[in-house]
Length: 265
Image 1 (tube, rainbow, N blue to C red):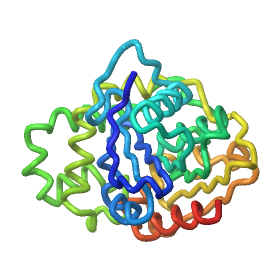
Image 2: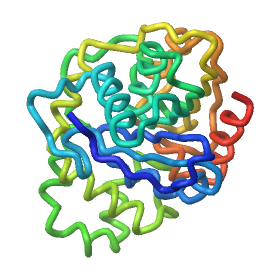
Image 3: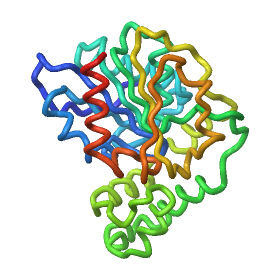
Image 4: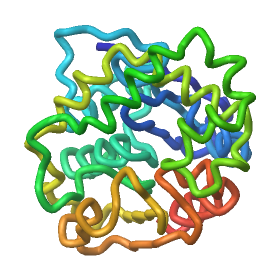
């Protein structure tokens, strides 16, 4: 299926950078860094199936490798681009790793922002805590716009996601809550991860940097940050005072890391 994508820079002389969001999220998750990166790259953001503006289609396989192929196909079909840099958050990071393993000649560099799939034991069922997040967002959907002005509601939604939740902008919180509440493919994409982990091989021809926050409660150390599953040649970073969405907690630093990886790649 064709994914909904957004191009934020049209200078064809610039390198292409693709950003891939996580489960229950949308392309809007990258707003804090898109403008910073668009000054030097053609940045393409993507809405995965059943997320953001891309509808859910039951015929689309939602495991990370199949989602990676859908991204390859959509980027080439829409923009005629076969090779690009990629950065992904959470599920998006896992997808990016699968893409680099599957077609390494098409991925110039890769940055995994708290990537999923690096867990010691694959989950066999959905986690009640994560299911509650989705159901809560759907239940509170009529109240999201006004409710997120209240500290109590923002604490409920973001205190476990970010140690800097009180500093997050209203726009970040609203976009995230809206995306979660409207993610029709949430459970289907989640099921696509069950029983799996990233265990493919990314060749050293693809420069890889993986970073996690020191207080990632969604994919905590050590059970979801198994370094032996990451490409052996990757650079592994840990960011202080950072949760599961590094581009929210430290947008300037994350944008700088991505630019540095691309420049050295």
